Structures are given as structure tokens and as C-alpha cells.
Image (tube, rainbow, N blue to C red; front, side, top):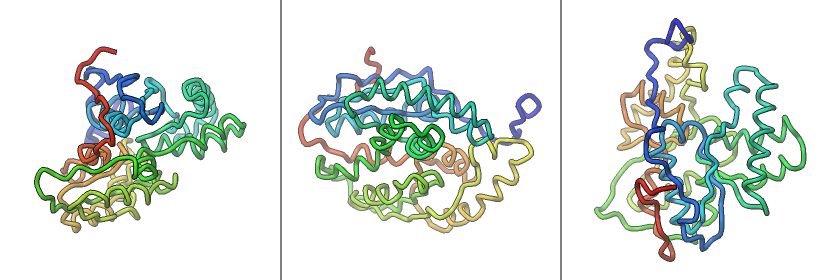
Length: 284
């Protein structure tokens, strides 16, 4: 990999999960709260299909939404970060057209990736600037923003055993930029027995493909050194972050499992009225 595409030989890469049973939720969520569109993004779709992807759909269904999933599309942020502005504009236009088709009549769009949400809510209006793009941006939300906004629409199950855990919550750079940070903290603080340790003022240093490169691997690790020291001093029982790149970087440096918050909070959410959930291996 180092000689062919320039990825540092010590950089850990995640396996693809495309072979995992497909999650198709359309029409199975009861839909008492109407329809919602879910955009998983590349990391969830290809590397966390059984984790972030499945948990996000399950949470939305438990909240009473009928979920329409936008598979096989990329927000294009990787193109923007390497300076391919024209390529980014093309990708943005393609995705906006698809989101417009799939979210007609003002249907809200939910993201579990902070980078994808940042693209749609802030970068697309800046680079495209048309009214359709701005309208789609205005009805795009992080899944934790939805949970925070609709907090009265669902309850929280009491843990089977009393929890006394310190959850270290790392909110990545794109999360802070897209304005959804406080929603994450408010949702997590509702879980009984959880003490939140917020380390959201540090960068992990990976910066997309930046920290993958042979010439920048060591720089990337050094950039994240303050975060790694903070995590080490936190004495947390678990580390949570919604960013796939941060999960990769923290996991490699700290040698610990890092999880998307939606995977952790999902089992605690109780519906107001019964709705059917995803069945493993169900046909499309």
C-alpha cells in the first residue's frame, strides 16, 4: 500500500463490511411519526454496516419513523480536502439531486456522520448556492440533534443493572463546525448512571486522508497528541465519537475500542408505542 498508493505501512485500515446482511428498513418502522431519510455516508455503509448504520436505523424506527435509506452515495468531502473543487461541485450536485428526489414534500434528512452533515448543511450552499440546495440544507440534521429535539417523543429504558460509567465523549472538528455538539452532550446526559467527560476541544490529527499518507503519518500522530494525553488521563470506561476517522485514529494510538454514540444509546431508547424493528437478515 505504501509503494502503490502512498498509505503509510503502519496505518491500520478497517475491513469492509459490505458482505454483512443488508439493512433495509423501508416500510418496517411503523411510521407513526411519518417518513424520514437517512444518509449513512461511506464510513457507516462500508466499514460500520453492522454498527453505526444498523444502530442509526434502529433508533429512528424505535422513535416511530419510517426510514428511507440513501445507499451508495458519497458527500464528496474527500475531494474537497485534497483541493478538487470542481470534482466536489459535481458530486455535490449529484447528491443534492438525489436527496431532492428522495426527500420530496419537505421530508427531513438525518445524518450519523458529522462530515457528511457539514458538507450538506454548510459546504453545498457555499459552493452551489441555489435555492434547492439551501432548502435541503435547512432540513438536514444530525441524528443526535433529532434525538435532542424529539426527547419527549420517547422514553429511556432503565439499565438492566445499575450503571456507574464514565463515558469519554470526543466531538470531532466537523461536529463542532456543523453546530450539533451540544445536542450530543444533552442526549448522553439523559442516560441514568452515565457521567460524561467532554474532550471536544482537541483534534485527533487524522484529518481525512492527511494522516493516511506516508509523508504525514508521524505529523498526524503528533497533531493528536494532546487529545491522546487527555483521553489517557480521563480514566474513562468507554470512548465515544461519531467520526469514523477519529475512531480509526484513536483506536490505533490508544489501543482501545471507540464507538459511535448512537450504538451506545440505542438500547436505552424505548418507544412510546410498539414499532417493529429491523430483523437480522430480512429480505429487502
